[in-house]
Length: 294
Ligand code: NAD
Image (cartoon, rainbow, N blue to C red):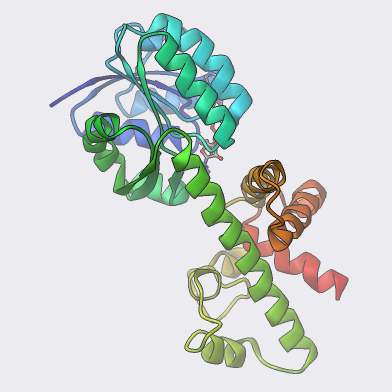
């Protein structure tokens, strides 16, 4: 079934996600504050609206892919008033669990349905349509959104009610941030002990130290040729986004009185790295600061 979709936020992720929906035959009307994002989206067949309200005025489904909770809540105040009653609101941005629940309440109060559906897989996953969606929604809303999520991604996991998708996203990325620091520290320690990168990789990748941060996104050049370390840490998962996600996890831990000591330390290290020089580099470039400290 083809749907009328209003898509707000056509940046690095939203642009290719909207393009994949067009490719699958859906009618997508988009809006972004950036002229270059609009131009790129138009090139992929997205109909361009003059405002966010106009983009969703005739929409059955409203998808947002915005930088942060502040942007989502501000937009939802406008979008929930402009969309036809009963529209399905799907927020794919990574935002705090509390903000996701407020956004869903705003949509429901205006007579709509809502789900949080943050993603993992990065820009390559958005382009290839292979994202993983983590969804917080009632069963019926998840079922209705699933065919659209299947166009933009390979997998959609129903994690629970409102906010559960965001909860899963920040817990996963807390594991990822901590494990990248652990792998990086091990390489730096190995260097100081005269151990080659390849020797440590050959052992740890087939032993109990094995993890995604080592075997897919290895922070040193050589052992995994496709990892960003082999191209000066360019074009990967930006350290600034990791800092943002770890900040959301640390805030949630504090609010729930969960110690999460390593998660909070990882958030501090990434915030510091992103602020100093590494914001646009792949998050595995954290190894360069750990080496400086050594
Ligand atoms: P981006 O900055 O490239 O895109 C965001 C877009 O939103 C921009 O084009 C901006 O102009 C637009 N925007 C901001 N406020 C707006 C408004 N009020 N109305 C209309 N447009 C507005 O960011 P991105 O990389 O696409 O990330 C989007 C979300 O996806 C973030 O929450 C991020 O944490 C999450 N995410 C990103 C990645 C990644 O690898 N880039 C991976 C997973 C999740």
